[in-house]
Length: 190
Image (cartoon, rainbow, N blue to C red; front, side, top):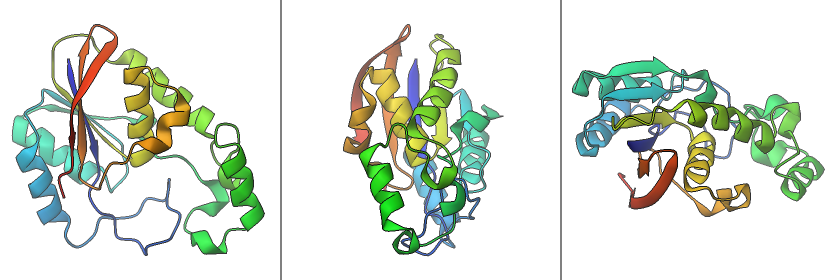
């Protein structure tokens, strides 16, 4: 099975603001950005999509193009930053950010969700992915996509911050059975 792990296009939010679960809209360039992203992605038979408004337009456009099934998947939501949502990073108490940096696995930023919780949530979804040779697109956020990539590659969570994906970017992962065998392309679409 081929999986395309696709990050939503550019959101409409002030730079430097925390917006994990905050349901922000897309930038004014959304139609152009989505068109450019869809144009370079291979065809898929199914699209799993975060229900966030910054993911759904891209997921729907890809599903329309390929006449593919669109499945809204709550497990693909971004990390919940709790009370930090919508706040400028510079306005968040430095000691709280330091506590998170010291324990990114166990600390729940803003009282929201820890990386361990996100990892578990995504692992449940990965376990449900069908082994059939059907190409699937996963349209989501930076956090869940990096977690999914590491799980498919059977890599440790500590490597999460080694992987970056631009807005509208995609990773292609080819799987045989339950094992990811390689990442042949790291695509930068913008």
